[in-house]
Image 1 (cartoon, rainbow over the protein chains, first blue to last red):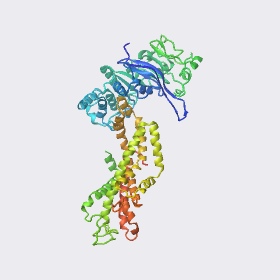
Image 2: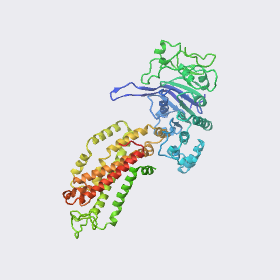
Image 3: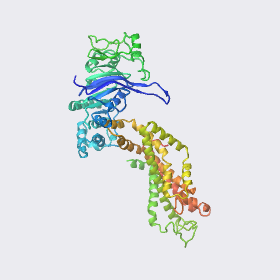
Image 4: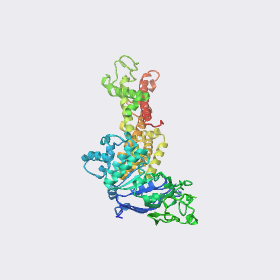
Amino acid sequence: MSQPLLEVRDLVRHYPTGQWLRAGPAVRAVNGVSFDIAPGETLALVGESGSGKSTLARVLLRLEQPDGGTVRFDGTDIFTLDRRALAAIRRRMQIVFQDPSGALNPRMTVGAAVAEGMEIHRLGTPREHPARVAALLEEVGLDPSLAARYPRALSGGQRQRVVIARALAVEPQFLVLDEPVSALDVSVQAQVLNLLLELQRRRGLAYLYIAHDLAVVRQIAHRVAVMYLGRLVETGPTETLLAAPLHPYTQALVSAAPDPEPGARPARIVLSGDPPSPSAIPAGCPFHPRCFLPARDARCHSELPPLRPLGFGVVACHHAASPPAAPGPTPPS
Amino acid sequence: MIGAALWQRPGGRLGLVLLATVLLVVLFAPAVLPPPYLQPDLEQGRFLPPGAGHLLGTDDLSRDVLSRVVAGGRVSLAVAAGAVALSLTLGTLVGMVAGYAGGWLDMVLMRLVDAALAVPRLFLLLIVVGIMERIPLGVLIVTIGATGWFGTSRLVRAEVLRLRTLEFVRGAEALGAGHLRILGRHLLPNVLGPLTAATTLAVGDVILLEAGLSFLGLGVQPPTPSWGGMIFWSRSDLVTAPWISLAPGVAIVLTVVAVNLVGDALQDASGEQPR
């Protein structure tokens, strides 16, 4: 594997709760997460709401400070940078948010929004900006005449394209896509996903694609990382992870995702209960209260399973075994 | 766009027409009215009831009441506009700093505002105005303006706190925007909208406040006319020559009603719940 573009090591982010002197239990949103992303690669980060994936995204871009760990972008530790160096590196990593209606300033025209990054980083002269804005709007499949409009005049899909153009204006190498299509209609989702794939091919972008289910992951990701209560529980290449998930939580997610190929599909695994609160994470394996593996035992209650290599990826489960000959999760007994 | 929405509401339309009338009269009437407001009409005499020569009569010093109402309107409205502009600036500044900076600065600023809000505004004004012998118009404007921004700052702070969580502010940060750009280009323009309605309503408050102060003899000083002052100085003639105080009184009521109608309509139009 080539030199990674992004190296995340043991990232921790806790939120203190309570007021004044009476401190409550900290919300442990991100609990020691490590992964790499290669240039031009898409890593999908999948987890339920509350699993800490959006917090992770904000910390990666240093929109929030971590409580521990490092993030290296192209070899530079982004948490030790001063303001100027941080501004320079931010140009190279951008974010696209979930809700395109909140992601655009309602008092700014589309053109002004797209040009803002160029102004901040002094890319080209102000005279060149309108032409660059028009080119970017065309690149994301919008009519350049939309530059004079305000966001309220646009549809959800158009807005998300504007948000993408705004991020691309500073010519980044890496985009965090925080559930970029989950607020859109299904037909529009496919168009935006295709746009993202095309942009990746044309510009060699690396993506961290955050999703709460596996529905779109198959289309866009090279690798998948599954997050549960602030930790990665399994990472692997998309194909093998979807075909033969190793961690019981991944198995449940896979069984819930619609299968593109009709026919014999394994029984749906329905997890019991809600995920525990990130302020009261269970001891031992954080998944043990909801685990359905027949092999689960006392060790699961006391000992945190480390991520260990298994098959084509890594998995954090004491009892995960190499996939059986027939792919697909074993239905729970 | 907001103007059209205003015009579509009967209250807004009535308010706009009334307000425009008041402003037009106050601004342009002096050009057409012959007797200057300070010059006594010694030929006709004092306490003339409304009639042909003096449309609204004359006062105890034989001055034309209509001219004085018009001239007093200029003073009263200038005080209101100046004071509201000052409160708006101060309140927006403090509210944005508190909401954006957060932490201890927010704490300190908001506790100070709480303390100031706990004291009735008139008391604050009386403290300042009471210790001065003569009150120049500028001092009056600054005093009223400097005691009127507390509520505005809370409003702005709340709005900034709401906006800060929206993704476009995060996105601007991720783009590398500095604090000034985020404050000036992303927060300020979005704060001004909700402020418009509150500001309009504040104009009505300040007109009444200035009238009240002048009525207490602590506002605009004679011979400069102001609406409140005219009522104060003619109070002893209320029974014998009611038109002297009635004319500025009606002017105050008309203006405040107009301003409040516009403010309410603005609030409706911007989709906000009325207070």
